[in-house]
Image (cartoon, rainbow, N blue to C red; front, side, top):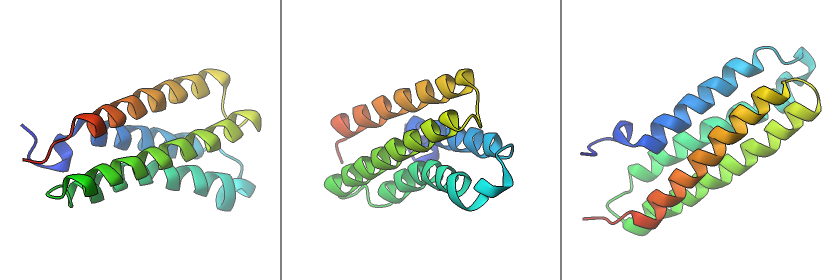
Amino acid sequence: MIKTVFDLEVFNLSYKIAMDIFQMTRNFPKEERYSLTDQIVRSSRSVSATIAEGWGRRIYENEFKKYLIYAMGSLEETKVWLYFSKDCSYISVEKFSELEKNLDELGAKIYKLYENWKTL
């Protein structure tokens, strides 16, 4: 049974991915602190924060669903920053592939929740 946002699989998965990305960026060059590092951390955190904000408005079905769409937008933004991280050689191809796979799976789960959510 889902009682809080912490019971949503998409919230927990998005939070884990955001923390993985945060840890990964600790090794980025200092000169990227206010650009790439800041952007990828912010966009990855925005996914779970937006899901939580939508959850707070869930009594209005379309509101919650709108926030799930916003979360997918932040997820896609995170992917772009991930590509920059790889192409700037800040992360390995293996780490990139792992995170990209996790983001793709999360996106599919968010979309499935969007498609199936019904407010009681």
